[in-house]
Image (tube, rainbow, N blue to C red; front, side, top):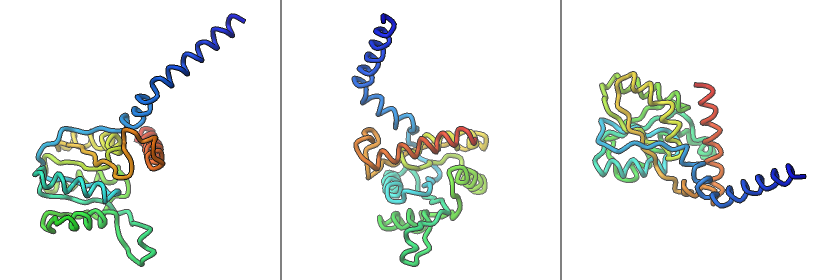
Amino acid sequence: MRKLFIASTVVLLVLVLLYAFRMPILRAGSTMLMHEDKLEQADAMFILSGGGYDRGNEAVKLFRNGYSRQLVCTGGNPVVELKIFNMDTLESDMTIANLKRQAVADSNIVQIKYGTSTREEADTIIRYCKTHQLKKIILLSSRLHTGRVNYVFRQPFKNADVELIIHGAPSSRFNEYTWWKDEEGLIAVNNEWIKTIYYWFKY
């Protein structure tokens, strides 16, 4: 009887503590997925495919603040929904359209129509850096994606002697620090954790 009482008390105490600290615990569910470096001027800014609206908007902001004059849009994934309108459009096309919508000149934009995963994009960008002798680059992705980007990109780029600055674009659909309040946030954090664990095991 005494053991049951102690066990029940411990369980109750744990539940009380979890409730009391629920906000920091939930916030950690997203902050553990993020990694951002201090921004500096770079030879080029690479905008990873996907999320062309948010990433494109952040790229324009950094471009106007003088962090880089060359914006490189990567990605070979098609935007499937646009096939409804008989449009064969890549995710990198969408990012470029957003840049041009905000008056970024063609001369400042480069497109690489390749890369269907974070790993493929890393290999592609390393080759581009070597070919064009780039020594310092900004990698721009979604804020929740930056931890996985750091995991995949950091060591290969160190080996290639290219300095990497990782930066995340904030979501326009939810707040990354209060993600549990929106369905979009719940889905995004869940998906990113699944992808992150998959990458840990695969690479």
